[in-house]
Image (tube, rainbow, N blue to C red; front, side):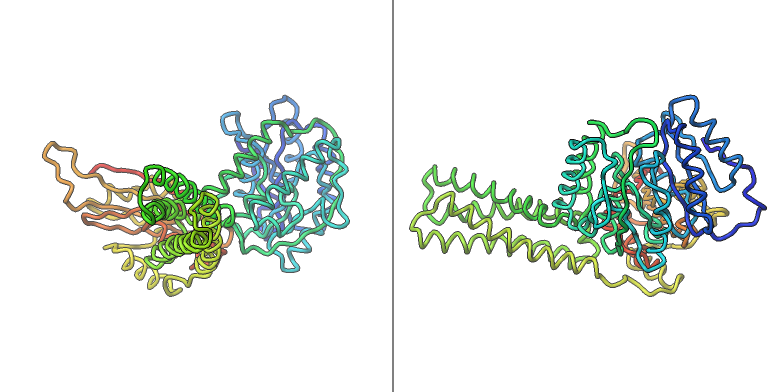
Length: 516
C-alpha cells in the first residue's frame, strides 16, 4: 500500500540530488527526531525520503502519514503482512522507487546519525560510486552495539564475509546498514538480499564499483528494541551461501577449492578401491584420474563459473576444459613424480598431488575471471544496427523495439505470443521474459516441427526504469534457450555502459511455456 501526498510541491519536477531510503518497523518513538535531524542535515540538498514501513503496531503509520502530509519530500510505502520479506526487501523496494542521483540507506532508529549523510554525498561527488559509513575504519566507533557479545558477533561476521568474498575487502565494514550509492551504478541490477545485509549484495554483485569509506560513530538506539535475532543470523548464513552458489566469479579460491576438492575425494576413494582389488599399476591412478577429471570439470562448470563462461561463447567452453585438463595434468604429474621418489603410491601422495591440481586450477580460473570481466562488447553501439546484429547472432527472424506504454503489436500468429500482458510484466518487473511454444498436444504430435519462441529484454534508462523493450522472435525447430537469453542480457548490459553485474542474469529469467 502506498500513502503519499497527491501533489508534490508546486507540481514542478526538479532534479533530485539524493534519495534517502529508510526501512521502519514499529519506530513511532523515533520518527519525529528522525524527521528533524534529516531536515537539518539536508537543508541545502534537493532530496526525497522514501520510508518502507513494515510496522505491526497501531501508532507508527499514523505518525508517518502525519509527517508526509506536512513534508512533501517524504513518501511512505506501507507494506501489508503478505508483502513483508524482512529489512533487505524493504531496502530494495525503496531503492527501486528512488529517483535521486544518489541513494542513501539509513536505519530509522537513529543509530545511523543523519548528520553523516552530507559527508557520504560529498564522497559521491568526489568520484566514488559507493560510500560506506564504517564503524571500523579510523575515526569510527561501534559503541552503540549493546554489549561485548554483540560487538564480537558483529566483528566476526564481517571477518567471515571478507574471508569468503574478496570483493568485500574494499571496505572495513561490509555489513554496514548505512551507505550511499550512485543510482546509475545499480540501475537494472536485481537485488536478492536474504535478511538485511544489502550492502554485502552490492559489493559482491558489482565487483568493479568504486568504493570509499567515511567513519562514523554507531550510536545507541534513540528508542525501541534491536531487531537483531538468532533468525537474522541464520538468514545471514543463507545469504552467504546464496551468493557463494549463485554468483559466478566470486569467492574464487573457495569455489576452486570445492571443485578441486570434489575431484580429490573421488580420486582418493577411487585409487583406494582400485588398489584394494589388486589392479596392476599404473591402472589404478589412471582410472582414478579420469574419474577425478570428470567430477572436477562438472564442478567447475556448475559452481565456479556457472553461466559466466557463456559470455565468451565457444571459447569459454574450451577454457573450461583447459582448466579441468590442466588441473588434472598437474595432479597426475605430481602424483607420478612423488610416487617414483617414494616408491609407493599412498593416499598422502594422492592428497599432495591434488593440492597441486588445486593451485593450477586457481591460477587458470583467475585468468578466466579476468577474461570474462573484460570481454569486448558483442556488437556496435548504434541501436537498430546493434539489435539487428544481435538478432543475426541469435538466429532470430524478427526483432524490434517496443514502448512499454504503447507497445507495437504484431499481427497474425505472433499476436497471440507477443501479448500486452507480457510487455506490461517486463516493464513492471524489469525482468527478461523467455517464452516458447510447445509442440502440439495432439496424439500424433511431432516434435520436429517449427514453433515460435520469444525473448523480451528490458532496456533501462539513466533513472533505472524500463525505457523500452527489445523483442526478438525465432521460428524453427530449435527455439530460444536460456543460453541465448544469457547472450542477449550480456549484450544489453555492455551496450548500456553499466558495470556488468557478477550475478548470473538468468537468475532473474521468467520462463513461460505457451501452447500453440
